[in-house]
Image (tube, rainbow, N blue to C red):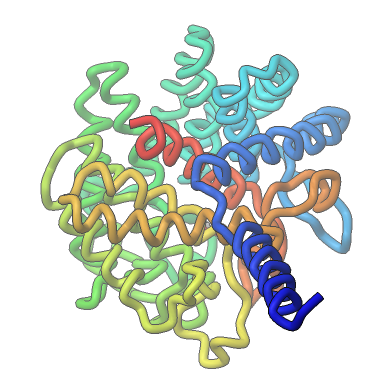
Length: 402
Ligand code: GLY
């Protein structure tokens, strides 16, 4: 072989190695990412469902000391896993998933009469709300209406908000936490279902009062506002789960974003969309939002970047932004969806998604429940999985199948 032929051979080999590498490095399409993620979620959730079904009356919570941690139905997160199963049933029509969704949803039934918590939206609407939507079973409707009535008993017209917690009465006379915005979707459903204007009035008043008092000028929000139940005056502004009273706790920002986007969907009142857009700007323009768009557990922890991420906040933000992309102009929608794409790719990668059969059957790793209390730190959480699956389905429905 002469010298030239050696060169040609060498260059041909080089070219094929390069094109093989380029091929493997090519990004998968979002369609493929979403389909794979939903298939994975289906398999993984079936494992968790089987394990939990065998534990009488229990529902999944997280992993503690390497073992599956479960709760009774009165824990604020009881509805998320049944809700995830309903979403997956909607996706796959898998009868086994449907069977476990029904079984675990029914474990929450007694909470329809629980007047000691504001979390009935999470507990009942994520579970029974999806169950009713997908099966139309009448019994689910009456359970949901009873639950909405129980939740409404926590509304004080002087304050104009639903009371969140009953603990720490010395510190907070009438605490309202930003998470509480998430209950309003349930009450708006109850209004549409029954025609009872009171449900709507509570939702609208709560959203308005929260908008007035819970936000800072940069549209970040406080976790907790405590009011005087006698005068409705703001008494305390602070946090419970965040880094500090003046910090921006990531999940709180996520609940706020989702809450106002949802209130715009439900009422078509423009001011809620404006609020949601301003919250989105706070989150998306934040200099401490990492490149992969999964927030640290609080935006203001001094040790950033050596701080844990909160996958749950990432999943809630993704789901909310997909919805918002349907309400805004094309440029803004593109800006939101670019972030969503990064979030979904990140969460669906092995950095956050557990291999099937590991992580006790939870889909995602790396969420933070309550960092300063050392509770559910760098752990799987049922609401991270719920809003992640919701985001996957929303992306499929609104973006891929539009
Ligand atoms: N307090 C509900 C949450 O951790 O987001």
